[in-house]
Amino acid sequence: MDKVRIIEVKQSIFENNDRDADKLREELKEKKTFLLNLMSSPGSGKTTFLKGIIKRLKDEISIGVMEADIDSDVDALAIKETGVRAIQLHTGGMCHLDASMTRQGIEEFGVNDLDLVVLENVGNLVCPAEFDTGSVKNAVILSVPEGHDKPLKYPLMFEVAHILIINKIDVIPYFDFDLDKVKEYALMRNPKLKIFTVSSKTGEGLDEVASYIKAEVNDWIK
Image (cartoon, rainbow, N blue to C red; front, side, top):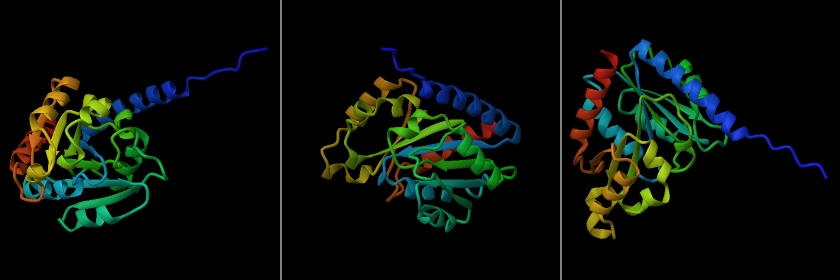
């Protein structure tokens, strides 16, 4: 009996996406626009964190936000309240964005007048990590209630991230969460990871993150 033909579709998709992502990065560099890909699980406090960062930076650099979700405009409406430009990207049921989808959002959005565009990716620690969106930096938020073992369970997310934001540190006393362990596990996956500890609710640590992002943006657009 003849063998069934097997086609490595996944590898082809990833290779094509990587080329598209590199091209998009080059175009954003020419436009002097920094794209930050923000990823996390649902409920990590992504939007609240982002609102705090916008508050600290919007008078110094021009910011736009692209909110990705399967089907909702709640987050985009929340971001618009901060006074920055925001759009919602519906993924049609997909649990991630790739470079082509990101490009569609950017072209519709218009970024020529923006220094920083934040892509708030779909809430998921698996799919978004597999696709290069064309971002300059990838950031992942890990909240205290999720547990300190997430870098062990979802290694790829922490391997592709440049920035780790440990959020909700104000509730550490109420959870079995080891801050030293989560840092150890994360750095085991990625020794170059830049780690911040914050409370988006109280504002603790947000000034430091905002200063870091501002410096990265200015370095990219100069």
